[in-house]
Length: 430
Image (tube, rainbow, N blue to C red; front, side, top):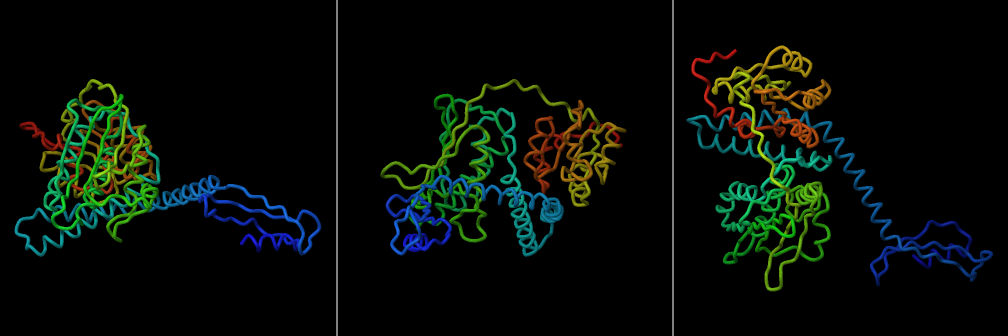
């Protein structure tokens, strides 16, 4: 390439600069050539050599950012249309699985339908989370408690796969400021990756995943360590790159680590990978977050004070079925508004104990309704959304975000105390 460039310059031809990678340094170089005097066969040529490694890296980052912005716009546009059928499929299949007398084959088919709908919902949520920079929130979260709850979530699945989960937690609480759901998502991503790394080990080799927490220099430290083969040195620089994965097709989207990196970065920390010490195999991922002073709990208003009535503002019939199936047996009267405008009018007209709002009704003012809905004594507001930014803003206003598409167990988790509280003796539902 260099000879062709110099030859073209000697002939007086205009040629674009040549970009080559230096074999000795690995740097990216840009070569520009021009004749020193009049063009001639053996004329002297001036060659400008520029190191453009950093420029190329910035250009690649810009292209990637533009690509992700386009993905974000695309996913945002279709998320609502995808989430409605996914809520129907996943939610109703979960209810059907609880029916008595189902044949084993029917139950297995329903489990497959439910699992695949959940997987599709996770992919949509992950893409939305990655494409939009959400705010981390201002909750005080005890990382020790979060690690313990994460271990309970994954413990059973790891045991049936023959994987040992070991915990070593700091003696004192590790309070940090942030979003508990997002931080737990990071922990789940790291633990699932560690489990994937060890489950393919030959029989007889130890399959172990360790979760460790500690306090160091005013920071909370969380480490996830596995006994797998480790990350090859040639791939270490790519593991936080979006859509990069070493898993088989269908087993991962390549967004887990890049999502986790962004979440930890938004919380004021940094996610790192480090090779294990000499003599130890596996991979180690860790992150540090600044410790926060605990804040007093101001308490939560009694949800029953607003009456055992629920207003569902949602255009999806499946959401109504799920809400009725869960809340009516608990003594709630469920009312439905199919638009944000109708919902706003009914909110102004009556006090409601619970409001369940579909944040995806953006064209009809649901975003504005979710963000401006005042906090009223005795009323609980749950905002169903796949938008991380709207979830964060709703949380800041004291409302409870609910992932979209939501499943019956998600709604139970978000409103568990409401459903657990028995109806008052003699209370009449409106």
